[in-house]
Amino acid sequence: MSRAPAKRTATRRGAKPRARKASRKQKKPGLLDQALAALPVSQTTLNRIATWTIVGLAGLGTLGVANYFGVPAAIGTAVAETVGEAGLRVDEVVPQGLKRMNKMAVYDAALDQSSRAMPLVDLELIRERLLKYPWIEDARVSRRLPNKLVIDIVEREPAAIWQNHGQLMLIDAKGVALEPVKREAMPDLPLIIGEDANSQEPARRALLDSAPALKPLVRAASWIGNRRWDIIFDTGERLQLPEGEEEAAATLKKFAELDGTQRLLGRGHIGFDMRDPGKLIVRKQGTVNAPQAAASGVAGE
Image (tube, rainbow, N blue to C red; front, side, top):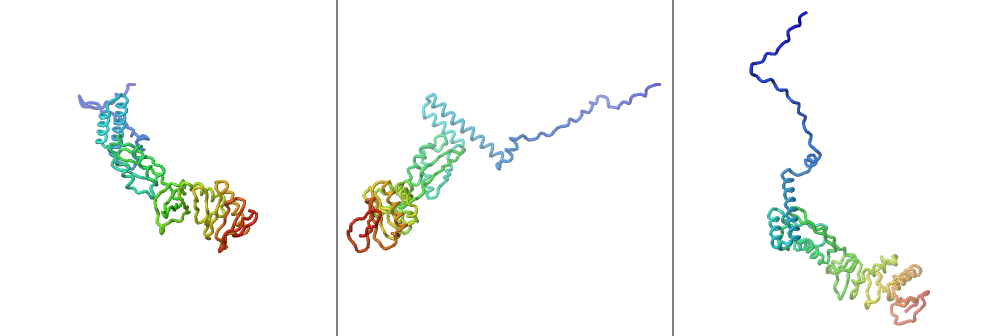
């Protein structure tokens, strides 16, 4: 039985056989490409940022190497200026945390530089300038490439009003004088009176904390002779306390107990003398000089 002849595909003489089409699989973008695509900036902006960053790091590295090998400062400065001309130059100052401090003072402290090239901006000098302002308790200055200085500021909080020789001044909890205040614009803060009384603000706060029941009734605290306190109440009476922080706190606490049991405040008295911790003298209207009494009782004057 003979085999059937094999079929041959007719081709033109000299023609190349058809190449099979290779199946190409579409390459999926990597995680980095996906992350970059998700950023709300264009590819051009990303390229600029990368370029500025490389230039900046190269410039800073060059300055470090120059200093290490003792290259003259003028050469290092020239390199830094070149970096600045390439785009790394301070064009914007961003103060953060300001509530009462004037922004212009921050700008002046930051931009008063011999050069605005990023490598030459003295961050510590800016911080030192800012800390000279009473309102600023702390400051942190940092570079944000390519052209920003970010200044994070911690402001002091006013805690009391200091009255001295008729002048009114806002002070913080440590007694640092912040700025003058007009009588008609006085905020609702405790009043502290006397020469150098601001330096005693932490002691005043500790004293009143020893008698929390009396604290809301206090109008002012007067620092007498740089040695002791008089407490002035909203009712107009004045309590004279002894010298010494511990003695004054114990006496004020004792007075609070007596006021709670015998209702001393708000009865038209002129004041109370407890400079001798073992005695209480009540000064009444229209009386002058009277004998003292034991602390267990109350003496009238």
